[in-house]
Image (cartoon, rainbow, N blue to C red; front, side, top):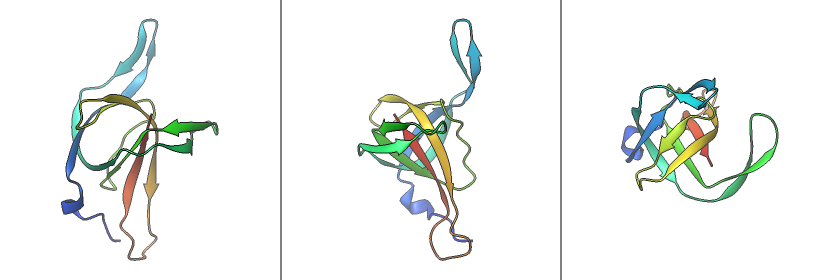
Length: 105
């Protein structure tokens, strides 16, 4: 298995994992710093529910990174956004780099 090289993970994002909802709003876990490569490009993606939504940024992280949908993420620019989906990208033994693609609102 080929991993995304660490030297490509030039940015730091802060992830507050989504833990659920309460009567006062969303509940988040403790903030965690994650090394990533951030691409601030607008594109259309599918949410876990199958709807087409607009993603304003995508972060690429190491394959063991876990980021639940609806987690809160702070980008290097200081902008805070929400995770649409985090998708495992596994090359299946090919020489492509395995990673997690984090689609952000």
